[in-house]
Length: 366
Image (cartoon, rainbow, N blue to C red; front, side, top):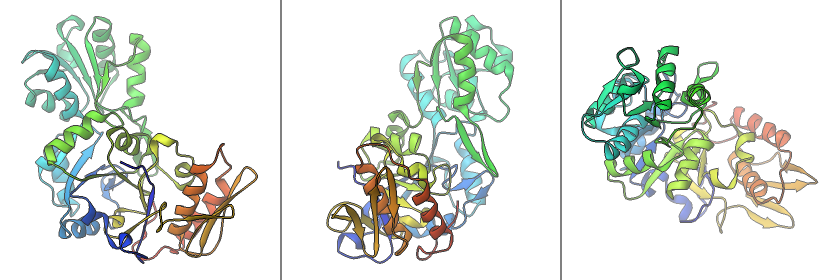
């Protein structure tokens, strides 16, 4: 499968461009934090966009690295935000981690559960016996499943570190160092895992969540997806996970990743599609390579009235044209460069254009 970045555009310049992502893919594997909601609040326009995608025939799977909540709670939260969801449509990294352990351990094996209620429930449903830190001695458990929870305490981390030192298998649900919250970023499961790693003196035996393929594969199997599309806001988890699994991805700019970060994306974390928000699912997809994408002429990448080029060690973009065309050109230029570029000025220019609405309908700021 080709790894071609794509930018969404409403105008549709050829037959390929008239296809929308919602009609090209049967299932959207949607990240949650930074994509569908931030904290307790829906991303503006997310509910409407997902309703439109469903109306176009796309099915939804809500695939989250956050292991703290059980699927029922996540589904209830989504439904309260105006996005009807069933627990069966939710796949968490806790479920993926519990599946890994269930394949390696006998039924009812005691496993130390670190994280929110979603971790314990996933272990129980996988046929294992979850044990909390207050009830476990280091030698009583055969494995540790560590996931995020807002109430994770020092005692949980200490119990995990001691169990790991006693030889317990250590599975990390996800490696996210941060997670988006209103006003900025907060420590994620990866940050908490580093404390256990420092105390135990070793790294986890396996990681279930993105960017590792286990969660993606579990999600595809549960959704019975034939042509899945990963939708996320992070290059190092969502997009890299899609690349590792070999399926296309859409990056939305409502969470962690901004334009400058996107332009610096490494070869293993470049999205196939780019959109301002989830409305990109229903826009007309235009590739940034091939006959409908930016064309390389005389040292410039051009599409419509937009263009990007390299001047010395700096990326430059034209002030004209839709910012999405410009971003497509900028990605093509930056990702084709032989060495790292200075992209801050070009990124600021595109961010300003996006915030001033030079992007067509339904553009939402992160």
